[in-house]
Length: 77
Image 1: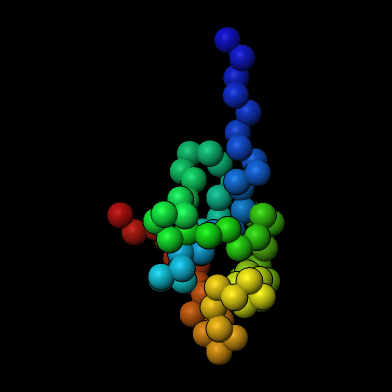
Image 2: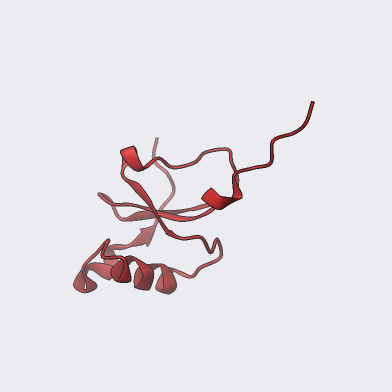
């Protein structure tokens, strides 16, 4: 039986639009869903927090004054 390749097009850095928490997705184990408030900020899985904040502002996900609210956090269950 052929193995399905992972959906690498969905790998990247995601941010929750409500909490501004960011997560790095580089495995198909869990893929964030837009209906849960997650949006891909960048497909670059090794982006720095500074780059992520810049991308979030440029994509109008946060206001420039609020870019410091974009943070890395462990997922809460």
